Image 1 (spheres, each protein chain N blue to C red):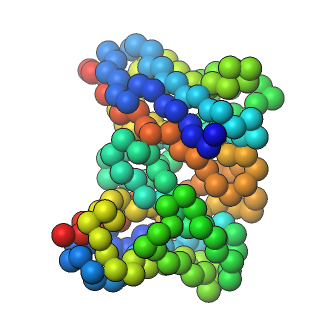
Image 2 (cartoon, rainbow over the protein chains, first blue to last red; image 1 turned 180 degrees about the vertical axis):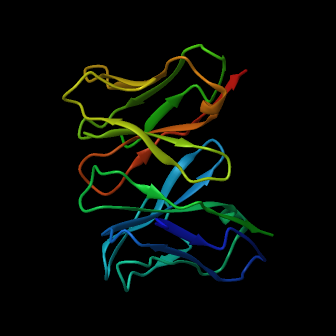
Length: 113
Length: 111
């Protein structure tokens, strides 16, 4: 049972480059989300999706795009990477409805130079 | 009003001791309060959660104490072990899909 799978695990980008962080889950969860984790700031919600074709912004959405074409996949796109986007990114999924356990992937450590 | 304030930022406890981590919130619409445990290089994993209709929930050595009037909740780890060394996050949710996380507590349990 794979759970939530994120790729890549590590990435170094140059300022201005674009890239997509991949997230896939095999639990048939409706809800998926992306967080970034920075020292001393906890986990902050970037974007989330309540089902295929439905996405919405979280707390820190600027500079990121998402789409949800299937239940399983929820990629996060960095349009033009900036050093401020250096962070650890986590994808999470949960079953229907709020107030249910969120399952996290192992994270992608992104460095923008 | 959306913040969840967590303290302390770091904590060192002797093996067998009690670890206590505190969180406070302001939004009275929050009605689900989970604690997540994160080991280095891993994603957070649900440890224990509570709803405001109870004042305490215990699972093994882990206990959540909840004070609705004070808008505070805390995690107690009894008989702390070196394997408990990790970062702990409290969180809150108010019936939406948006979890609000605390800033995390790095716990180290000395052998």
